[in-house]
Image (cartoon, rainbow, N blue to C red; front, side, top):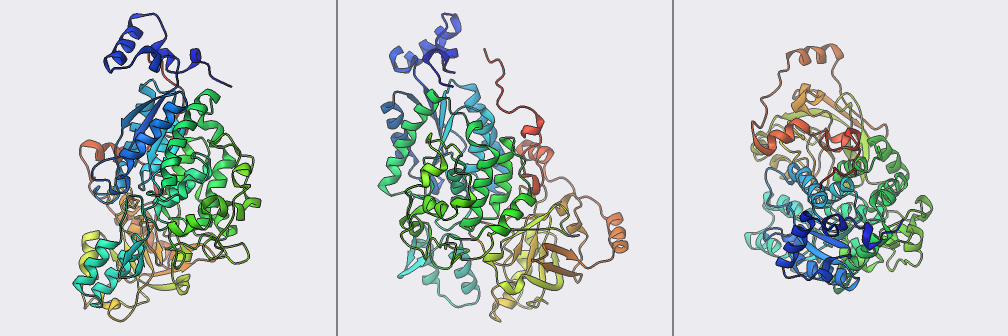
Length: 576
Ligand code: FES
């Protein structure tokens, strides 16, 4: 299973003595390269998701140089290739609508170019699943280079966590408890270096998943973006991909059912973002592994939460996690639950990778005897409101909401909900269950992160900071609270959430994993008969294509024609 210069994929472009290969060689020479620069060497695509407006990837120009240096040192030939920079903060209506676009671009860019191997440079939320989904389908050897978390936030001596503290200080501002100057101080201190959000939000969850799937250099996901170890990891990734090409270490040998299970367990132990559910299912299915919501719930019930990092943990952030030993040390705590024989991009097994790992602070990385939360961080609910599932993050909400019954307060759109929560005279009690619908994959559109519905001002003023909320939207991985998300099927396509009315009683029973509206079946049938579908959100463009092909939350929101079920993933068409 090893490659020789003659059997490299790139040899199909450059080796034959024919007119087409003459063209390929002559155009490489036009770029200033001699034949010995690229002939017979692994050609490595460096897929870079940098842009001037992606604040999480601001260090990627430097890292790309370091990756390419590593490729050259190991005897490969690097080719940097820009791909869509899906940034979380600025992309509207939501970055999620473009995850599948980047996945498609990644697959097609790899397939259409003479790449023998690929380094994927990503980190901001959607870039990790998108790059990996595409590269899994392309099937050539690849290694993931995670952006790394930014440094801890700081304002007036207080530690600030991405997202989580923005929500907290915003509630205090709405309650009239902090000044304009303090608010601007938080604004200037909450994101103070390059790198991804440094809570255990979606970005750090997804890079931890990539790491535990075996797709990075071991432990790479924990290294802060601006640490010099990060630069060394970048050049190390460049060196390693060249060897992966010679070893023909293709992704199907790494992303196996056992590796997916490892990644799901690790995700639960980190206190992962709810978004992990959607992306892990989508990535697994690209690899031909049929991961389901029920599989994840079963692992969630038996995996303790060990990483004491916000928002599930109380004090610490990703920088603390790295200093405490990082992901490898945490994996060692749960080693007996993992398949240690899984091979990783490093060419070593998971067992070998964690053999020497140590915990340096057992308040940050907890032992099994003292977990942050006895069960994993996610639970999957079913019931007459969500027959195809919904998710909740029990560790990140007030335990009194784990069992709750109250009247629904239903909003049909984000605009309607936003106006209502700012109404100081809104008729709402702490027992109410706030509902936002038409915010799923098709309704949002694009499955936006609106699921952490703001607590109504009327309750904020009374000192309340949590209440039960339900939506078919997602929420940011840095969010928290009693939020039931990803209700499937979504209301926009006639899921039962569309039938709920303000005043209906809703019941959540976390222990039984149930979410129901206490409405008779006859009444629901009458409402169903009266329901009319809303007009489609898009008539043209990407949104139109997205609407025609996107799946629901429980299947990972991939396009129907891109999943492995639609056909063999890796097989290359005859491109010559
Ligand atoms: Fe990029 Fe949070 S905004 S990771």
